[in-house]
Length: 189
Image (cartoon, rainbow, N blue to C red; front, side, top):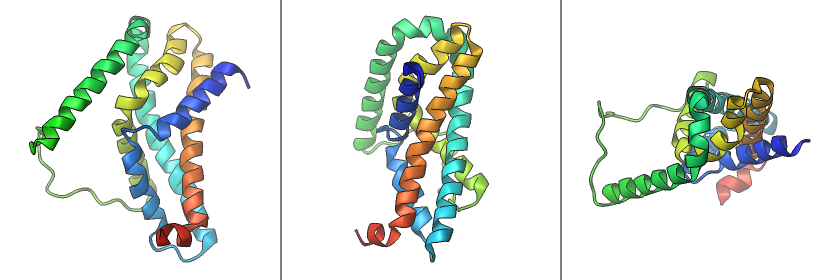
């Protein structure tokens, strides 16, 4: 495997466990464990859910990457500052929330949406996971994938995007399979 593809694969793997979205992973994995009666069914459900979650993640990152591709040349030298600025903004928002205040919203949710094991629900969960992950994982994503699209190599950019998506999907699938196969021990702990 070429070094850029390996780098994109590794960035995708790290993107799956970034600090911004990682807190959502236990909720997803606990849904896989709930109500599991046999290992074979749990493994099938784990693989299906991992594929759906990856699909949702890829949709959000793909749309975001396509939207930013025209600006990649301008963004590339500014990515370190963008990342620092975003980190400071997240820190300020965290302090705001710790002070007991709420973030403004257009329409407050009366209750959280229900997460089910259906394909559309898992894709939506993947999209939410990706949205939460954007703050932490977007700089490596932009540096690796979008800048290659901007450089004029669409095929190369798509290959790097595929490697990034594969890396993210591998981590989610391995975690889901681990929970499916070891669910009794995982639940006990």
